[in-house]
Image (cartoon, rainbow, N blue to C red):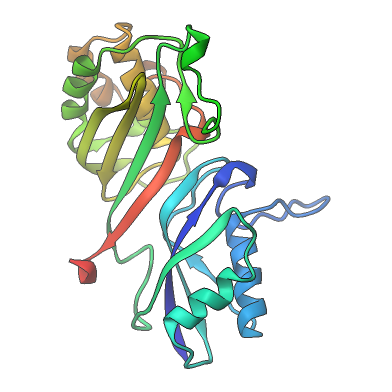
Length: 258
């Protein structure tokens, strides 16, 4: 018996998120977890169960999702990677594989995660709208001031109660989270990347952070209001939940990886 860890990349456009879903009526919705689990079962011919580090939402992408499963085999991790990739659809790919101890928990052992939100701004000019990468870049009509956005980013760093930055019915015991880094940078003309990392994230938290930073960048929200908005714990004070296509889970880190 061995425990395999996969680093998984996927284009989330056609998926209803990571986690398996089985509606009470009709066919099950297509998810990354189910497609990947089926491919592993086909490759190993065993009834494996797959566990992921992050439950990305419908339409959200990943470059560094972590998934773990146990199999009664001694096959080399690279050969396992190749075998499973040969069974996968074209919008999922295993990019790395290794063996981990049986105690390894992809959720409980995680010390930090990093997300990137890609955004094309100033799209009132239609020439600036994404075309070939439109499934990976969100848009806003507003021209954004990145210096204002970066100042606001710095106020988000640290441990706070982020109740204002999640859905009202979020279902979590606590809304206290720690953001280790938050930044905005230009990656191409009229394209920006918002990078956020921390010890954990609430439902839609990064997309709401992105929406709030857009409000700052367009001048709707003052930089000085950010701390007050956090303290308010009021979802009505934060920006919109930005569309899922701009978001990607970039990496997940563990103590043993240091």
